[in-house]
Amino acid sequence: MRLTLHSDYALRMLIFLGLQRAERSTIAEIADHYGISENHVMKLAQALARMGYVETQRGRGGGLCLARPAQSIG
Image (cartoon, rainbow, N blue to C red; front, side, top):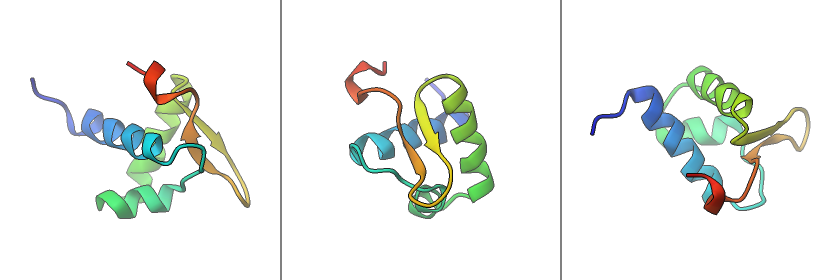
């Protein structure tokens, strides 16, 4: 099975957020961890938020986290 680069990064983001538990992660943290551009991570975050997988919060103390428990994503 072959994944597109977009799908690969989306799965990596979900895994990263799943390992963070209840803590919020920033776009910059995820981009730095995987060595990809912040703009690309931002586009992925927006798409995953629209699909209901990721919850976003803007501003100080904001960031990304999973919108539901990791076990229910499948």
